[in-house]
Every structure is written in C-alpha cells, then in structure tokens.
Image (cartoon, rainbow, N blue to C red; front, side):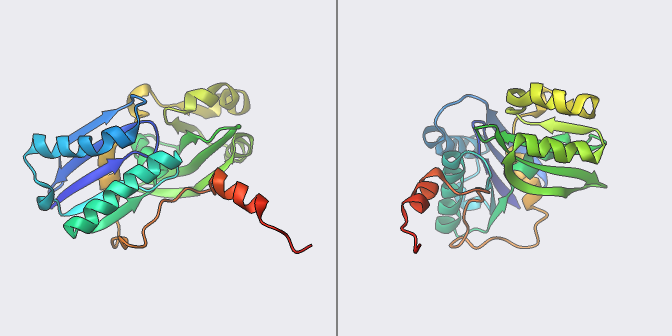
Length: 233
C-alpha cells in the first residue's frame, strides 16, 4: 500500500511517501516560503523521485491542524482535491500529535507547541504507552501561562517539542525550572512520515466531502463578524 503524507500546518513543509511500511522519501523544509507556491510542487517532486504516479497512491494523510490558518487550509485543500480526483481515502491527523511523535523515545510527558500570538499557544500533552502515543491533555488553544500552570501541577519531566518553543523558552524555564526539557533542533521539524504513521493506525478514513481543518479556535474574521452582529438587548 502506498501512502502520501502532507504537513503544511505551520512554517515547515513536509511531504512523504511510504510504501508497504517502508519510508521511500521524505522532504522537509524550514524555509518560511509561502506554502501555496511550494506544497503542490513538493508533492509532484516526491512522486517524480520515487517514480510513483498519483494514480498509484492508495491513501492520503494530512495534518489537519491546529496551526497557521493559511498553512492548514493549503494542506487540507491539496489533500482533499487529490483524494477526490483520484478516488482515494483521506485521513486527517492532529498536527500536534504528529509533532509529538518526534519524541516517542522520551520517557516522560511530551508537549508539542505552536505559537498562536499574543502570549497564546496551540498545545497538547501526550505520553508513550508501549508503542502507542496516548493523549493526556487534548489539543487546545490557550494562554501560555495557563498551560504552564497545568504542567507544573503534573510534577513530571516534560519534553517541549517544536520550532516555536524557542519563542517561549524563557517563560517556560522560569515557571517549570528543571521540570522542563527541550528537544534539539533536529526533532523540532514536523514530519509527514509521522502523519502517515498515525493515519495507518486509524480505524477508518474521513469523509472527503465533510472533512474540515481543526483550527481549535475561531478565526479573526469570525470574531469580527460576531462583534458586528446585532444583539437583542
């Protein structure tokens, strides 16, 4: 079985192809270039390098968010378009959970983190149970201070993972001290192969028609729309 994986939920871009449980190719980049210009060419490139035509792909896995609104939309749109035109099953995977997979050898809590501006973050807490990554705290959008208070109460070592962690490292160290551990730059990059790995464990595919990004918060445009709506008072 041939899988195509796509992760464009944040600044990094990652695309991978897995065939019969073997990673054939994975190309990832941290360059902050518009995904709308790079994502589809990246998909075409991994297909070309592996001599696999789109019609040979059996399933598509995509990071569904949370993360950058634009980044998530681009990846989901590409995945849905390919799944629909090729008639292939589509699997959405949490971008936080797939990032947490980078720390699967760590013996402790895993905290993937994306910056959400204004001292807020997208985050979740996971831990490995055997070969499975289990959720301790669901994906959420919250104030960094609130997250750190919750983590402090857990009184366990916590590995922070993600390129955006460095934006908040000082606050994390001040609040958690030795409880906080930080992943190296080598494992802070989201991997499309992890998106595929998690999708392969899913019980069933998502509906291509109804599948939507998981932003974990409403967009600024939606906030402004709510503010403009008249009240009945």
